Amino acid sequence: MLTVVDGRSPLTIECYESDLNSLLHFLGSENALLAVSGSSLDTYFAHLRSIGRRSATVARAMSSCRGFYRYLVDERIIEVDPAERLPVPARGDALPKALPESTIEMLLAGIQGDTALDLRDRMIVEFLYGTGARVTEMLGAEVQDVDLDEMLIRLMGKGAKQRLVPIGRKLAESLREYLGPDGRKQLATVQSKSHLLLNHRGNPLTRHGVNEILIRRGRASGIDVAGLHAHAFRHSCATHMIAHGADIRVVQELLGHSSIATTQRYAGVALTTLRVAYESSHPRASNVS
Image (cartoon, rainbow, N blue to C red; front, side, top):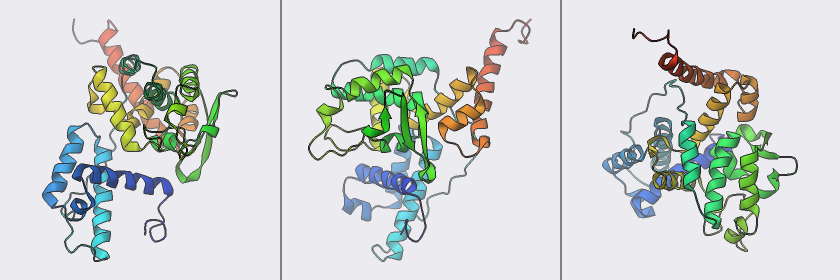
């Protein structure tokens, strides 16, 4: 229905599927998914907020939930729509929140060890922060998309648009370790596909899995995990590059934005950070005499 009737893109459908799988995981069974009450849905969305999911993520999860149960009612699989009273969240123009550079350094420093999962998890952080990729782009990457000789990686963005993204030195080191004999090869099975990122069973890693990894690693590193999610690294990559002098059109190309207006939001974040630093350090900027 989403593909043929609504004409949604594969990436959008993948996001909706991830949202519903997360709800299924929370409820515990398909029977519970079909028999869920409105109050149980309220509890689920309160849970998402409590573990630090950002407002836009919760809003999309609500949208996925409303569409799913509306479909079940239309198909007469269930009689009552438990999501009918869910609010329609307002979509504001709040500036994206970047993680402090020190937080990212703490997170990476906390992922010690040389097991396959350690190598994978370090690479995930380096990948998200180093490329500014959407989590779905990272999860869609295959081993053959990585070219460590040319230091490039091919990503599939929104609207099935491909782009080549440079690989930095730290990401290259992490990729070489992960793609070596002690990394991905230890996770892969005979049935494993060519996806770059695999879970401990050898299956392609999911969006939910990535966020669970970040939260677990963040807690182990002593980091406040309230704003720690995959998309925060995309914000951080763009904001930190602009703060360090990158041209906004270069950042637009890196992130795969079709409009420069989208990228300009990060310039606003960088300017806000600059203003705070200026007012706290310049002798003639403070009101205190």
